[in-house]
Image (cartoon, rainbow, N blue to C red; front, top):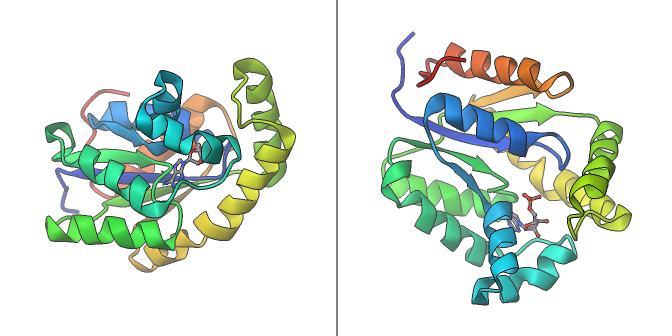
Length: 202
Ligand code: AMP
């Protein structure tokens, strides 16, 4: 198998699937930055920036920030030097329009995603983990209604993007139930099987 020196990754999974946590671990292993749109929005809301003020009501309501605005933020971030050889996208793209934006941006640079990690977690398990997180972290969008709303959007708009990437043969379906270490090991094994090279020891 030929090995690829880039690691352009996307992690997809329902809210509460652990993709944020696993994303950080995988990015560290492959020496690439995490690009999390949710983190960008939350940081801007917290700091009260113009972007934060613009998106606060949308994020609190569990709805999607407009595609063009979100894609612009991602394009800016992916244009920075540290993302030249790879990145791990968490939370973007989240619908067909954003997939089109990302594909267009990458294609213009002669790039494409190397792998899409799909974390598979049953809805009941996601709900349970989100309720726990709401108690622990007090995220303003982690109310019962907010959680259910975001899971609905995931199932309706985000899950279908996996079919398109599946046709490209780049999706790795990973069982997202188990210990954090077990799941990280599963993901790394799947990526290494594609010839992606890890930068750090496990
Ligand atoms: P997350 O942390 O990925 O669950 O994102 C938290 C919230 O940020 C979402 O519920 C949306 O309001 C917003 N958000 C994050 N990523 C996106 C995206 N790709 N498109 C639109 N809105 C997003």
